[in-house]
Image (cartoon, rainbow, N blue to C red; front, side, top):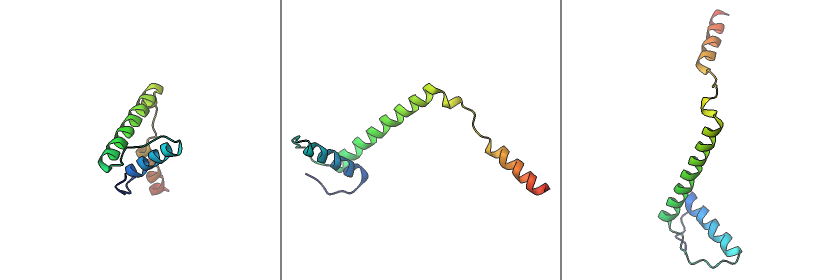
Amino acid sequence: MDEGCLCKACVIKRLEVSKKLCRGIAVKERINHKKAKSELIEKQEKEIYRLNNAINRIGIKNAKRKDFNGEMSSIVKGVAHG
């Protein structure tokens, strides 16, 4: 049922299967590394898409960002002149 891979995708898939078993759901699927990795990447892509949409809706994209270069320049100038 399991190839024994210890990558993140297989561990997550193994956890999902164990949760099904604990709930009494019959599980016939095998844990295959390539399939588990593809499923994890797909879930991550969906989550990134969802987060990007949420960020765009609330307008963080247009929020004022700190000017670190300007701040560091003024600090360096202050140290050099001080």
